[in-house]
Amino acid sequence: MREHAVVTGGAGFVGSHVCDRLLAAGADVTCVDNFSTGDAGNIAHLKTEPRFRFVEADVSRGFDVPGPVDLVMHLASPASPRDYERLPVETLQTGAAGTNHALDLAQAHGARFVLTSTSEVYGDPRQHPQRETYWGNVNPVGPRSVYDEAKRYAEALTTAYRRARGVNTGIARLFNTYGPRMRADDGRAIPTFIRQILTGEPVTVAGAGTQTRSLCFVDDTVAGLLALAESDFPGPVNLGNPRELEIRELVDEIQRLAGTSVPVRHIPAPVDDPQRRCPDIGLAQRELGWQPRVELHDGLRRTLEWFATRLSPV
Image (cartoon, rainbow, N blue to C red; front, side, top):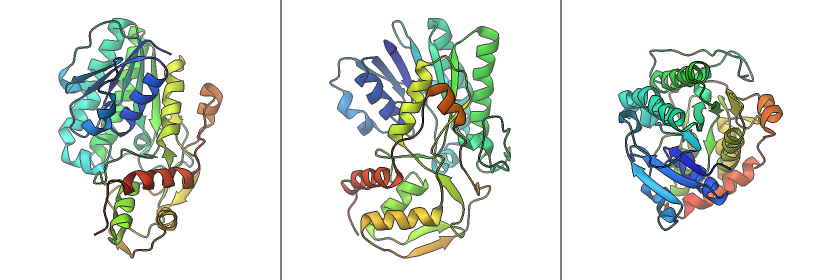
């Protein structure tokens, strides 16, 4: 395990779990965040941890981390449609200038650099399941484009630093991670459905609900990210659960686990909403020895339990 890791976006949903796992493995951790979408509550339990340091900064404007650095994990970015529609320019700036600054930090210290990219680089894919060799089907001027293109540019910049400047980089493409510490209002499917079901609201399903997603519990995602960090593999590599299910099936499963039933209300599907999303994880299995282990029912149960302590029925 690296001795000192810097985690940008470390107060976010996935980033805070990465901080926890790195500390548990014995690393010193510096978390960099500006709370534009992160939550101070996600790292509040780390305030008294002597090996944890917090730096409040906007990575797109640059940041300073004292001392030697062995690992830079770049997770900073709005990641839900509601957030990147609210912060379109900031999302692009984080993917561009923010990635540039994080790569410069890694280069200056000779550190391993890991970029958390996204399955959104595949757009509304015409290849199924998606392999890392697929170039994608992305609308560069659509409502989702600020996030898609920010991550595509970040991948290109990361690759350029590896080829031209010799930085030890790795790229992970995350598929629909879920779990505790997601914001109830972030607009993504699982927190939205759970919030609606636990508070007795009608569940809003976009379109017919036949679009598919592949859901990976956060513990599995973080394990994949740390396996990539400990390797020298450049990627890109898919990190996700290859079990594909329809959105309407997801609603049924959450209702069953919650032991309740609320009405379903269909709303218009968002523009450019991917109709199918499922990773081919053969590369992750071969190169990292990684595959997801948490079953959907167990991950959803743990997520429901976490939200239930924070939401009250109407």
